[in-house]
Figure (cartoon, one colour):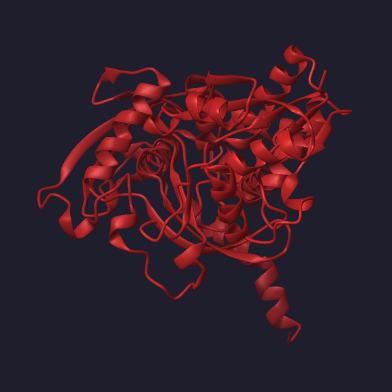
Length: 397
């Protein structure tokens, strides 16, 4: 009886070839596994296609609720943004996908797990760090680091040889990865960072030029840093993100075109659509601004680049990630309130915020007459703050 391997299978070019290659060239009994993290109709042909390509069994796991609740929302709480722009839509899904893959491998008594990430990218690291963190002795098969194929052209030829349908064509000369949080595009015509992405490439958002000429106002309520309602309608995590994706997409919000630094060392051009995530990120910041203590906010903010790097590089299940996220959760205990946003032509602008736990006081902040703040006290405060500056000047430095 052949050894079993659980393959993370998307039905795309790479994993379709890998499935056949593992079966024919390596002699494995291949179990195909697809994680539903919000790809939509992309999952419809998975079962039939995997079985026709040679899989002995297919798992299609609905992980959407866990994805949003336990991965996306914590990233929003942390305000995680990689290199100033990327909201980590692909990165944040990988640890969940890999975790479930290990669980299936245990259930099936598989000797190995396999993935379709290339030897140049970040996903190989993200998948494998999770594999080893959860199952230290698991065998990992990464065909792109093992087989003789050198390019996607080689894969297309192999697919033709075995009659495997392929989704890449002249009409779609790039690769994409979609989940409930975002969709990413890379490769092909996008490899030249000076080429503007074609408008027909975008799937979640319409162009700001074609967005409604009238702004739309929405309110998002947070409880301890977690979004719980839109326009006073309480929503479960998946439904809430889906609603904001539609609203953001309608108004052309959430497009990002960046050249980022991969963990393996090279730079890579990525184009992303994150409509609902962009709205949530903006709204969350607004509620934090009136509910978070200044020094707690500064401490948490100082960790944003570090947390974002840990997520991007695949260290979700690391002890350092556990520690910093404990601090993030503690920092969010009073981040409860409502943000009011205006959606218009690609922008989500904060126009109001309120909270029963607000630290903002009109009595203290007013420019009108007040009885709670003695402005003369500022003189001593400023002189103390200026002491080291005065000493430096007196010494002639």
